[in-house]
Image (cartoon, rainbow, N blue to C red; front, side, top):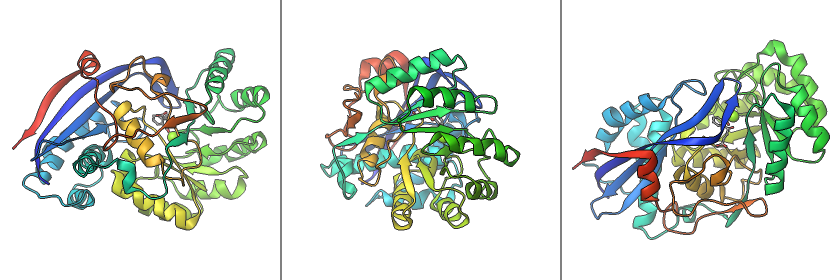
Length: 369
Ligand code: OSB
Ligand code: MG
């Protein structure tokens, strides 16, 4: 297949409640949808997910747009793609910039599946149609409000709660949640807010039966994480560190973590994500699916991928209304009995809600053959 057009929607969706992490506060999610069209008129869609600020990782949406336009899209010109796996190879000459790559690579996977009359999940083995989901809860220093929020999510059926923490906001909220919900599957995410000198403080978290502690230390640190993991009963999970299969191999061999938060965009797309899943299977390393406040498009991709039975641990894949008043797909995702259905249609399995898209976004063309 050949790519004849690439178009995009630039969208800004307001969040229902601003989301606070150890590094900042988000009130609105900016993202692009990348639409690729082949020579037969089939269309695939991918989501460009990086944040506007370089505060989670270094890639930002502005930089990603430049990388797409100047460096990635030209690599597809006149190329006859037999299989989406070739795209990752083609993109190898551009270093890093994984979220930019992923938006195009996953759009091409979607296109390829649609062209072949298949749902994306048919390219994975051992899948199911409904998947257990969890929810990530932002920093909320008013503990009454925090407990109210969590009570609501538990009532909705979310099977795992992830609490964002930072120095000065950890033991107290965790203690409050554990007191009220002694049996809930609970974990925390520090987004790199601590250093090795906080180790003895962090060891106190062992008392709360947490499923894991996500990314306590810096995004490029493997050694301090390994040191802490030796001293900690609770599993460490790495998020920001994991950009490639190599990072998983390094983390595994050093003992830096016992669990991997896998985000398809952070590792550059589906091809690398599939390799990481194979590695985790082989090493019996717990892998689960993370999120980037995706709209319905990125969420659909995440659901397709998380349909693989290896994803037993509930991911950061919530219903459309967890973050947004309106989604940009015609059938927003709903949670039922703690699970979300994997869409059945071709490719990622969702259709764009044009009116909503144009209410929150603008359309423009990036490439025409
Ligand atoms: O660290 O996993 C993270 C959201 C944005 C950036 C980083 C993270 C998160 C989340 C929520 O924790 C993920 C989601 O629900 O989409
Ligand atoms: Mg995280």
